[in-house]
Structures are given as structure tokens and as C-alpha cells.
Amino acid sequence: MGRAIADYHKTGKADRLRVFSPMFEEDELPVQTLFRKYEEMPEIERKALDMAKGKTLDVGAGSGCHSLVLQEKGIDVTAIDISPLSVEIMKERGVKNVLEQDFFTLEGQYDTILLLMNGAGIVGTLERLPKLFRQLDKILAPGGQVLCDSSDISYVFEDEDGIIYIPDDMDYYGELSFQMQYKDTIGESFDWVYIDADTLTEKAAENGYVVEVVAEGKHYDYLARMTKG
Image: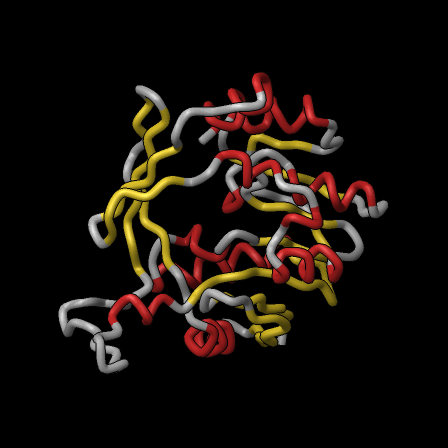
């Protein structure tokens, strides 16, 4: 993804960013959407940016589109990403505070933590979700908030009669694996989890957090605000 972001930033165009998963046919992530302006963002992303306040962390910031909007609003925002190329491009685009950083080893205190574009999925599996909350315990400032969006992908298992059938051998239907390819660069396979709102609420409560669904999108997606209970 870093190579795709760099190409688009420097030339205004990019090749196909291909996405593979055993559960789906080959898909494509339009690189230009990673450079979208506020008015081009989905409603739930705009809602999250409008709710951000205080010292803010933008996790998996990519090209920095969310951070740039927050900067324009006068928000003190720090963008992090594990891709060196993404970090380089964000700096070139004018993001003031950028770190090449793994979220799970980050230190500091933040009033708002943004996990957008299904950002809670970075834990990979539902079983590893407590790891997210342990890190939030360390870096979320007292009275702070986490704004994250995710999707309920149970519709994938819906038959023609509208009945949802989840295979018995699945641990959790939202757990997927992905692999990306850009030109001749093939990334390593990685786990990602899409968490429905009820499951997120349940798991958050088990780890001392309260979930409030503050917006719902048009494609089974939602924005949640999490606070320490």
C-alpha cells in the first residue's frame, strides 16, 4: 500500500492495488480514495472527525487524509503508520506530526484515538481483542474516547431466502485473512477482523469499556465511541 500511495502522490495516478482473500473473489482498492477530501468521505468518517477533540491519534493513517482534515480544524493530531513510504508521503503532504510506529508499542497519552476504515480490525482475530484494550488502558487519557468503525459482514452468509447461515467450523464469521499486491510487490498475508456492534459491545464490557454506536453507514458499517467504564 505504501508503494501505491507514493506513486499516486508523485504522479496523480497508480496501478491496481489488488486485494486477495480466500473468502472472496479478487478485489481492488482504488488508491485515489486514500487521498479523499472531507466532503468525499463516508458519513461515519466525517462524524468521527467532527467528534475528535484534544490530543488525537490517527492509527494506520495511510496517506494522512484524516490527519490533514483535523489539522485544518486546529486539532493537535499525531499520525502513525507502519509503512515507511506512507510516513514519508504524509510528511510531504504536510502532516506535522508523523511517526513510523506500531500501535501496540506506542507510548504517550491521547484524548481521542481514531481507528477508522475498519480500524479495530488490526487485532486480527476476536481472540486477540483484549490486546487492543490493554493498549488503550496505557495510552487513552482519563476521560478520553476511542472512535472506531467496523462492519457486520454476516450478510455474506445470507442465502436467497434471507436466512443467515454461519458454518459451524468458523470461530467467528468476521475473521478474515488478506493479502495485497501492487505491481510486482506482494505483501505478506495478514489477519483482519470485522466486528459486529453487539460483539464489540460485549467484548468491550468484559475489558472495562462502554460502547455507544453513534452512526450507521449504508453498507452494514457503523461508528462506535468507546470510553473507559
